Amino acid sequence: MAKLPTDVTYKDLGQAPPGIVDNARRRIWTPVARDWAVFEKYGRETNGEYTLLTVSVAPGGQNAAHWHGSYSETFTAEKGDVGIFSKSIGKVMLSPGKSITVTPGEVHYFFNAGEDDVEMKIKLHPAREGFEKGLYILYGLARDGKSANGGIPNNFMHSAIIFSMSDMWPSGLCGVFLTPFMKVLAFFGRVSGVEEQLVRRYWA
Image 1: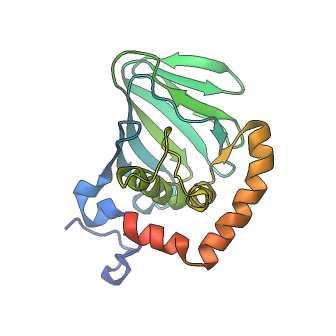
Image 2: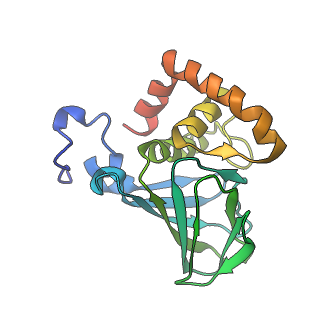
Image 3: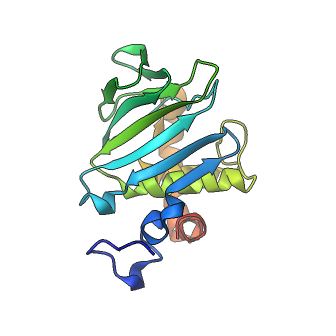
């Protein structure tokens, strides 16, 4: 078992980041997009300063356009050319070693336009444990066959819970109409215990 941070006791293991308890669980995978992510640093390990992960994107892979209200994201290409779109600069291709930071509130997405897998570092500043939990749940639902094409959960309440805890919201007119409804649905997911069930299954 890995050494626990000073603020995590053994009685708290149900809520501690999985990779702190078992290093093998730092790596998660989704069969839907055939992508994987490795959590290099959880927020618990950086005193909440940042979250750091390595993400692989399969050829043709792309996530949906979205924005975050409470943290920035810095993308750094590690292997291959990583495509990034942000509202302020449009589409750019990052060669290995090149970075771009997307500020809070800015619409963005990443993509792989090549024929081979690409890898990148993603750094969230400040850290958001809700994002970490949300990604575990998102990938876990996909592995359980509970996600449609694109990796979005089949259950809309599950999607609302993930988006809310991750502070990750859809863009455009769709986002304008959907976001308020998703916030309400996520609230009911919390009070009804659905969020806790998802966290216990895929995080704890």
